[in-house]
Length: 265
Ligand code: KIV
Ligand code: NA
Image 1: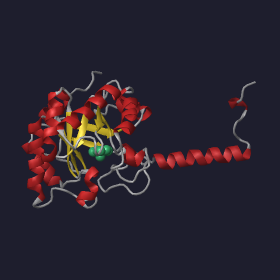
Image 2: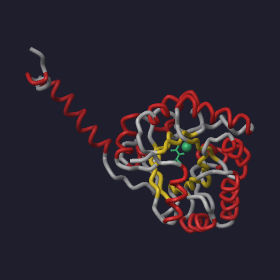
Image 3: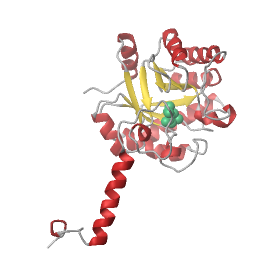
Image 4: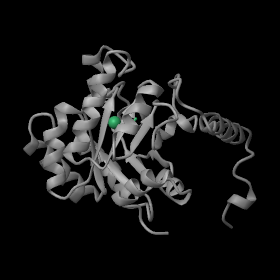
């Protein structure tokens, strides 16, 4: 079927069709999600936690993410591929932000970039959009500022809702085609979604948004450790792979693998 474009995000919101997104960091998962009809794949800097072995997204670099994004962008035939701009690659100025976005577009062939921040990032979003590169914004809990925010803390609660709405309006005004709302109360997300023309994509933002995004290793039960409350685990890939590797190890130990059917004459 036809490639997903930014206009399809707007059409979906306008006609009440819910958008789906998953992170992906490699070709094989991207192929599966694309064939299953997931609308967009985010090459998230959550690769820091799920691929590169860091405990936050803070150390992730552009040079680390570009090859992952290239693998994902090369694997899809329908899904829209968004590359995450890592911490330190855009905050300094709109020029720096555009430079990084251009690198992702040319070197990975992703279809759009994502960056964190509302009001504080609006000038960067505007510059990138003006150069012809679609931008997905990201507000609410922004993991790159985890240390500044004081941990994994729900944003937009109580008095914080006004700031959340200011951020949402700022990124829409700056030209973002969609905005991720991470870890915000469901009612705040609903009010933001009603205020905005562009679609809202929730990750831990409840049901009253225009689309849902999950980290793929979380939703598929592949991640280590505990997953956030908002994640529904749809599979137990960690359990399945543990069973498989245990069986392989046992078969080799017992001489049951390889058998004649796995051997050349
Ligand atoms: O990197 C990531 O996975 C993300 C989503 C959780 C929004 O930015
Ligand atoms: Na991210």
